[in-house]
Length: 374
Image 1 (cartoon, one colour):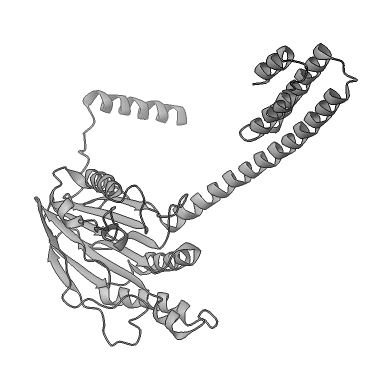
Image 2 (cartoon, rainbow, N blue to C red; image 1 turned 135 degrees about the vertical axis):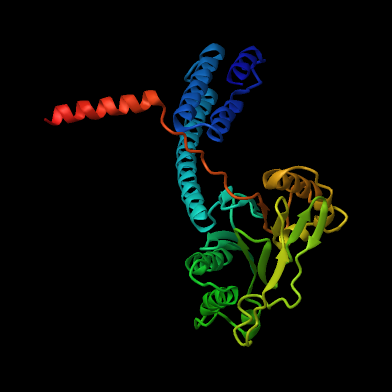
């Protein structure tokens, strides 16, 4: 651009002056380059303006002198702008790295294999640049199996993240210590309700009633087909069995956590039969409430029944792609998905006895060691 403006300005008639267009060079450079490149481009633009002045008239010409001074001033300001922008970008990168580390601590990625189960999980945040919100999931090993938690905190933003972190911490602390599911859910209820009792948190009574967390906890034993579950107002999981889809609906679901503190024995355990190769799909309401351009909700059960792949990873890839296509790549709420497949016990590593050559080498090594010690 500098070269074109300079050549055209030199060849233009005397009454035409294109030198002011040179100020665009450092201004545009400052939007994407650092201060050094911006200063270099500004210096080249000033040199080009000087060349135009010498060629057409002289450096003492008032018109060109003012153009050179203005271009120099704008180049300096553009360089300062590029310096501040580069510093801001560095700070933003640092903040993103810290936020990513904090998000990974709060919402730890689930293991791909835990006991006899194969797992896959995905979190789709509605807010840009976010990797966690009010949706949550976690696993914990017990003496007899695996417990899986999925939940959805009401609200968005930092407050929802704090509530999610509190519930996840309580689950990880008590999942392997409470032998019975009702006792575990009571512990989680206390952890959620304890924050609601803090004075000054609410401006009126209605906000307190609206503060809650839907959650479901599954207890999956290692050596049995019966899966126990307590559902506290959460969307019921789906069970995929060879192309057939069934809702794991609890007969007497409990209210969401944060609303069960004044009820006597609100938690009812429901048992389901899950065989090998069956897949349990846990999800949050951000999945089933995603709308397309016509306002239709995402038909999760129907799309799950149409899936013909293999394994939890393939299932979540299929559902995520289909969900985003349905919602036009823009989810209105955070969405979380967890797929669990009972794949049988972990294969044991066969023990290979040492060969005769290896035994001979071992004995020779022992003799050398004994001789060296003597």
